[in-house]
Length: 514
Ligand SMILES: NC(=O)C1=CN([C@@H]2O[C@H](COP(=O)(O)OP(=O)(O)OC[C@H]3O[C@@H](n4cnc5c(N)ncnc54)[C@H](OP(=O)(O)O)[C@@H]3O)[C@@H](O)[C@H]2O)C=CC1
Ligand SMILES: O=C1O[C@H](COP(=O)(O)O)[C@@H](O)[C@H](O)[C@H]1O
Image 1 (cartoon, helix red, strand yellow):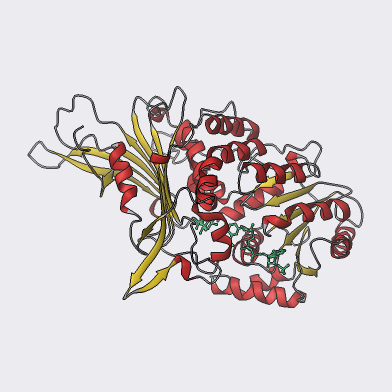
Image 2 (image 1 turned 180 degrees about the horizontal axis):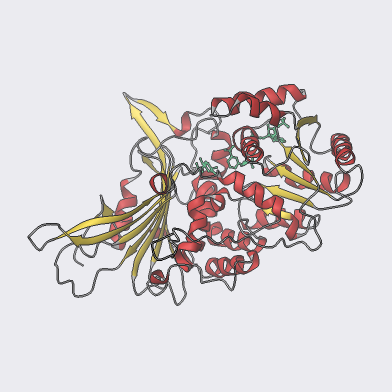
């Protein structure tokens, strides 16, 4: 309380959660979570740790939830539990908490294309439901497909045939890559769509679960000063960049079939682009948000060859090749890009003429993912300095930076570039930022599809990239070699230079006079 009896309000919070789309569904009662592909990499590194964190924070109650692992590998409950334990305990998890959590897990082994295993699974789930709902109540069944997409149709068929919930909801979570191009994605959508309704399907793009990606809507639409600036009159270009400082280690087989555009750009970076570029939705209802995202995707112009640079990391040291093709599962003459820089152009009133530069690469000099919205020069700049070098950067590892020109402190009248820096570690000291998978699993349990990809969104995303991908697949476009640990092919910088949009170390690179 202040001296005059007033009150300081330090932070005002409001929370927003979308309504579930399914009608008459229960959000309480016995919850069975089935991880299909429980023996795999994603289950170990992401799905089970996310479930553990939800449990640890009280979002999963031991008197309601049971977790089932399912895969072909013949292992016991304890084998699976030990596998999960050793992964969790490598992190900061306490062993007593881990032990409690592991008690919730059971393993069922079975094939993906015959009924036997799924009937067994259904029996185990039903036993759990009977035990928990001995008096009354509805139940909830969530099936998480941590599996290669090739088996999605048959697994969905088996779930539909053998494991449907009779007194509550059944939801299916599928991972990316959802298809390889427009036709295969549509085929997959049709196959699954015959079995499950859209509100039952949760297509994960884990970038939509990232804290800073979720902040984009708030940043754009809850801050008055951004509203009039966020358009072609004020914004010069937008760069959405993903870099990793390691290669495709251990995933060469998968990666060679997909490449960097399908692995990162067509999904993660394009989703980010949608949130940066979309119009204000009518409300925060998932359908309203996704309607706006679809409109952006449908406004993207066909990609021009001259606005694409592809790369593959290779190095020849003392006459010896090192690089992407070292992996025994990658063919010697692979044409798969591990790097791509692509300019997308949105043909609408807000963005006409503003390039969206999407860049992603493996085995580069650093690891980062960020969005850089570059403002135009200040007209009639009376300071004759870099006052025009203004951007807002959203770094997905939790900071937002707005570059500013300010007066250099002191007697002289000169300007200096500085930054407003919202670094989450400093500002929200002690607050744990949840992993994307935690948030998305919780959303699935709550029936909130806001952060999941709708079928028409997926189709529109494949529409944009399919022609380019087909040309790469048949070898018409080839990747340029770049050195491991470098910034990628020099041609990518040249592309931006040609387009007149390049900055190094925060300074504007003046394009050559035409
Ligand atoms: N790993 C990661 O970091 C990420 C993965 N993803 C996606 O998640 C899904 C799972 O990924 P991940 O765990 O890495 O995959 P894995 O290759 O580890 O496969 C998961 C499990 O599926 C089963 N499986 C593997 N290949 C086949 C096959 N050809 N036919 C039938 N079953 C098979 C295996 O279980 P068993 O033999 O015991 O039945 C395996 O343990 C994929 O769609 C992937 O693209 C998405 C983002 C990141
Ligand atoms: O989906 C994928 O994402 C990861 C990068 O995720 P991040 O959360 O660490 O940014 C990438 O390594 C992988 O190739 C891709 O399949």
